[in-house]
Amino acid sequence: MSVRALPERGYMWRTDELLRFGHSSRSIKALVDAGQLHRMRYGCYIRSSTWQAQGPRRQAMERIIAHAHGTLTTSTGGFVYSHLSAARLHGLFVWGVDDKVHILHPSRPSSDRWGMDVRGHTGICDEDDVATVRGLRATTLERTIADCAMMLSYPKALVIMDHGLRLGADAALLARMAAASAGKRGVRTLRKALDNADPSSESAGETMTRNLIQRLRIKPPQPQFEVQSRVGLYRMDFAWKEEKLALEFDGRTKYFDFKPTDEVIFEERRREKALIEEGWRFIRIEWKDLFQERAFKERILRALRASPPQG
Image (cartoon, rainbow, N blue to C red; front, side, top):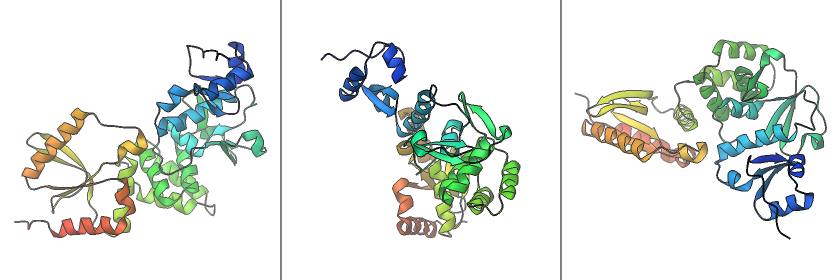
């Protein structure tokens, strides 16, 4: 049979919307089978070409949007987006976490009602802890950071804490939340992440690198260190000033759908060459290097030992 075309306008539809556009259950299935329509969750579909063109960060966001769109006519409300979904709505960096839709509800319905793509959390959420983010009800930035930190492992919690503080989260409020959560599971991770956070970190990779350097007991470098070169200002991810050694993290593209332009890369390398002429040395690392800890430590220690004498 011929497959009825999708509507020209829009890219995400509920089943009832497609039916109103003249489709039937059979034609919807045919569109899915033909690869023109991608099923996001029960009763909600997205144009396949749109879905396939998106990176992992945007796809995770679309799952939240699909949940909100798909439950518009089936949910009586009462929940807010929380934890990792709230983190994504606030634009926080997340690393190595699930892509389920996280919701906070005062009571726990059956998992069948929530859906297999949803991770439900039961708990109290006062209106002071709720904000409208991208048109959706979600936990506030501080509540989101605290909830995530108490659920995740320390390195993953630190990634969210660093970026949350960079975006303007209230550290004093987070400290009060930690104090009020005494004895609860995960509160030690929340406190540790808050104590060791650095809002100058510009990516999850930089946070993970700083944490690894600290854990391996390598001499701490200065983060976001600025040096004036003959061709302009250069800001290094990390620098050991006395040794004139810079450490640069090059792993943003894989996890955050961000690719610097050729012009940006050219200018960065131009400034780097100017600094090399002045005696600076550069170590560049990627995500995989963070999981080869012995090689990582030996590489940095070897470079530190090889530093030219100061005179």
